[in-house]
Length: 300
Image (cartoon, rainbow, N blue to C red; front, side, top):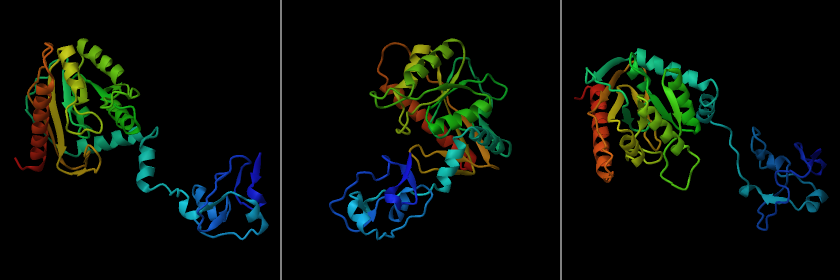
């Protein structure tokens, strides 16, 4: 049943679910009547107010008094958050896919090496945040599986590259072995099955929150499948580098678009330590990424 706080609050709440029901403050600076105009900033979309109501006896009867300075402020969504929410929605993947097509078809392509040997059962490795335009790399070639994370951004990008023709495997690696909700083990088995079946896989070499640091997962995948790892990179001359953990490269239209692939790296199934292969793959990925930037920026 909907009731009004003390009969004076302009916002209805269930009788036992008032936003400040039972709240007390022994260090009050300026008390307000719970739920009334002084607390309007708890209601989404209502402008904050510091106006106190003189309620007389009702103020003394109500023990739910609190200082406005200690109340959580719920700000209105920013343009950035609103845009992100839209792109994560059901139509966001189509918007992202359309934008990637715009970047690709308005850009001049530079591919190195010009003649590429793409064997079956290949693991294409790249760094996080640098792989949005890879679906176009495989025009006229067998399309690989792409590993995409389960979180909102991963599903948004995954949905877009799926529209552009890549097959998807959902899951991601994790540096915290106690967390099991990212689907990493299931995704590893799916990629292993695809590679043994003659398919290729596109995945990142680094795991979330540890940019430019090669994880063991991709090397174990190469070891168990027998597939070679090919380091690949993309860069555009017009770009914006985002201020996030992986320094995402946002590609812009009307660019020079560089695709670069490095030599294969094989990880034998001999039980040897992976540290040496981690260093080798990191050096190879850094080299092809730097080369891609040099070709796009004409600094080579």
